[in-house]
Image (cartoon, rainbow, N blue to C red; front, side, top):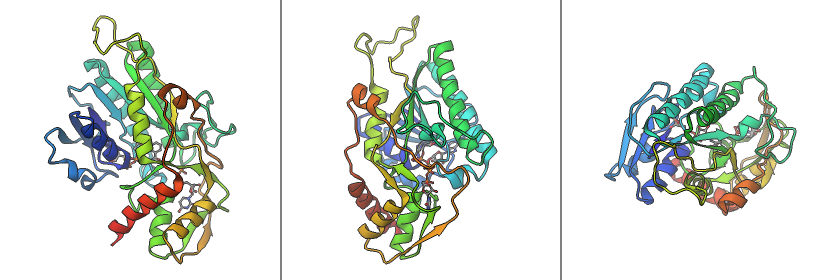
Length: 323
Ligand code: NAD
Ligand code: UDP
């Protein structure tokens, strides 16, 4: 199993889960936002290997499954070098699809709810094509991820590559970077240090937050999904397809405003922080919530961890690294 971006937040949990399931795991990363520390506890496992590599460059490997996660995910990180962000999304997808084609691997793209942009349709279903600014400061990420999806479906149509596209909605949990600028890590770090909680805009904008363990379960179920007619036997004259390429929304449909999120984090962490209001970043989506009926029906998957439970676990992790 190859996990690109494997030393990042989601990638490290995925590597852990794949090892638990008995697989051999190659974790590929260039450590732009990921950290060796995230996978240090896996290094003693003989089925785990770390590869330092940038996905914008081709690589020759022998693998059965590829999870393509390499890409900075937080707005401050993907806007740091926006040209590179587009390259990671487009060249990274091309390189992983080329690899999948050569070795006949199944390949999953970690796409994002950002492909829906600032949505006019609520909640967002997979059939909705989105409302994305092509020239804004978020475009390197949003449009980069959209082109990656295009490439995945063209490789399916043109080369019968066994593709899987999941659209991940805001996910949180242990191993997020305290400094990555995303709302959960910002609010928790601020609350634990009794510093002001920075709400951008008036705090009425919403997001829907999925705990990491729930997301990983959904990704594995999607990768595992096969229609009843096919067997695991590979037939090299008729390439093997799993029957569910996606795109598939993975997220928690429980929608909250940023104001509510701030209040919950202050209360759970017993902080004395007060909220302050700062300017809303450009093109910040007003509402976001997944319609997950497809995942519920096809994968029998839905998130189990409540926001309160997930925040408690995440706050415990941040308190430990904050000491
Ligand atoms: P992250 O920043 O923790 O992880 C990204 C990883 O990719 C890091 O380890 C980073 O070093 C690595 N990386 C970046 N550029 C690379 C390159 N050129 N070559 C090799 N490795 C590179 O972010 P995350 O939250 O774990 O996100 C993982 C994936 O999931 C991303 O593709 C992201 O777009 C997607 N996603 C995440 C969320 C979320 O809420 N966390 C939501 C939607 C989509
Ligand atoms: N946000 C905020 N304060 C912060 C960081 C983020 O109010 O310190 C807001 C941000 O403007 C957005 C929401 O929280 O409306 C989620 O932001 P994040 O960067 O976590 O994810 P994304 O916007 O990509 O969904």
